[in-house]
Length: 377
Image 1 (cartoon, rainbow, N blue to C red):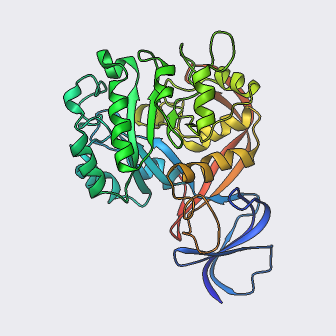
Image 2 (cartoon, rainbow, N blue to C red):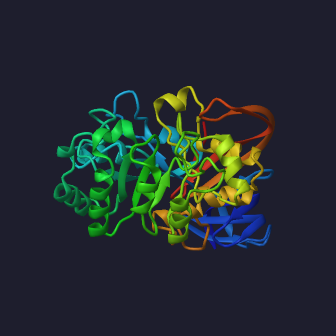
Image 3 (spheres, rainbow, N blue to C red):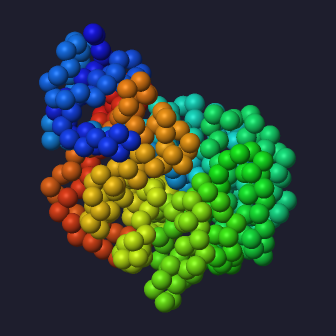
């Protein structure tokens, strides 16, 4: 059998199959032929890619970034936070709404090697006209939002609603009620940004269902999921029991080492790790990349197997695409990331300017997107 690429001698971590160990991965065209015990593949390969000393994982997925360059001082080029950084699929988190989604498709989807998907902002202008998009209820037009979803079913994975006081102003929980109504009619989940009240986190959580996503779940602001008594607030516990997913969504002001440590003591873990990358925190931190964010969880004591699951299989499930993404199963698309855990002293910073020193750094070496190999930058 003739294949295009054999990735050999790497340590494969694939949570979708439970694989963790030395393996070779064979690729033909855009598809994975199989994962083999080292040296047992009997065919011929046009190219050998040596992954000795590296981790070979399903392509990393970032379900929260801002990659619509029409958003002033915010949007970044998708490939700069995608294939350049070992991420094969990037999901824009509400930068565009129904009024400008066509432009988002032309400018951010069609011009990049990275696969780009989107959470459609429930507000028509998205973030293009400013960051208080839910302060004006005229921006909430359900029928036009549904029509946009119908035009782009292959790209739109859900509805985004940013539920913090600076965004909704005097409108409280109402924009989320609209978002949930549209999402139910479309059969899609909602991703909710949480921050400073009003509305209260409890009000927000009470509206969410199985499959919905709370991003920025581990921020350090008042009114978060851990109450003043040090316990999970009742609405958060009930939401988790219903199947609501808690996503990291690091961002410039939305991830706290202290909150994460408290959550771990309560045996609460992230469902998924995402970055909330945009221009400021890409260039000046504290986020920089998905792999840097993954390193922070390694420094907090989580296993590399857990971290890979939270950046591959788990986000693929959120996107309802785990039969094709976030896996190295035979026959699936050849989206693969090759990582190295470098022995390197680093200082890691959260959104509260708290610091951790650590002696390792997860670095992206190669990205394979649909069978094409890219060297990470």
